[in-house]
Length: 161
Image (cartoon, rainbow, N blue to C red; front, side, top):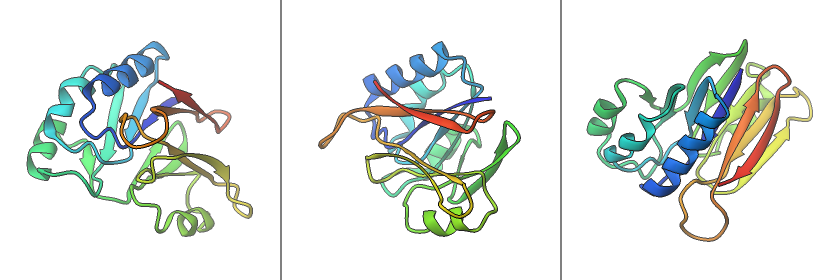
């Protein structure tokens, strides 16, 4: 299964539309959002996905009640545990316990956001993938990026939007 991963969209509708278009062009079966959508109107773009969607709340998400309503139950508190493509995944925003989750051996991949920097590596003892897609929003320094994860090979790549 091909999973699209994005984070920290921070209301940047143009970049969110680019990410959605990219994931649709790759026929992603699932798209994950690692937090900081910020405003409920972001679902005007996210709802254009042709894939299943799941996300988590980040530290900048404002109106969580309306976000939850617009997301129709697809946005969760962290950590959010899920299975996709036969793999055990956990979705976080802040990276505080990422290393501990990867070290637990309970997950094939630990996905996080918040730092606005891409990160792809494997835990040295468990082999769990640790992945941050970077940030979609064109704010602060750095590029707008997303990630693709192939659960068949557990290979991930960062894509510049």
